[in-house]
Length: 410
Image (cartoon, rainbow, N blue to C red):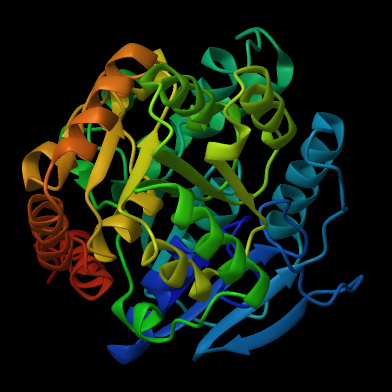
């Protein structure tokens, strides 16, 4: 089968986030399918950009053909630049001829919605199945989290495209377990909805590398002064609620508990300032980001892992954070401060849950984790690892995706 995948932000292990498209595509290639990912030449989510060109450029990585569409660069905080990039990718994929001669399945992946027009065009040309894959609910994310007006012309354009996608797609596949009602309200037929969460790649886990020497020395010194080390690895943004973790650590008033944060992002400086303000900077270790295959080596040094999110109305539709799967695969007990439908940590017995954005409750969860025996913490981590292996293997998810799309097909 030939699969054509429109995904503006698609990354790879060689470029950085976003990894979901790559992981699905690699499994489909292993199954014997041909996969072409059409992605933007520049995306702020990547740590390395592909070679820039003014023309469409092809590249083969791990059996997947990437077609890089030239789009303008921009600063992540510059919304005008990001909109220019969206407009460029939408226009070029819709009107420029792509090097694709045949497809049996065409997938349009959101973050944003407008590439659905190009996807529909190619699906019609090749008489292929059309799938709208939803990772973020746009434009709802921009109106509920960003405060944009629903009467903004850009938002109205995105909304028309979202409605068009729900109407014309043969299936709507989403990582958001609770998104169905929103989609129904925008014209989707109920039988189209399929929930396929983000997963884990065991092959990537086997390809892990050691941490840089400087990171190892800092972690070793940090552990000497902290009997319980709680860690986080990933992007440091406001939505990740790491400020709540710092506040909760201060509330414990326990000098033997430390927090290690690996990553970078827009709120890194604010977190460092908060730790100093609360006079707990000796108990908080900040480490520069590393390659994805080095993250498991960091997780191995922890006693527990933290994952949290802001308390946002948008999350009523669910979330599927890839870092949670990574933490569980590492066999670490989880402190989970997220309020969404479907609590994976509670379901699997992999850790302790508490309300989102509640420093007092998170403080209690941290103290409970510390007062547990190492054997009990290890048992939590083992349960989480077994659960994620059984339920979130990309090999299984990729097969489930295709099965759902082609069910009842002649």
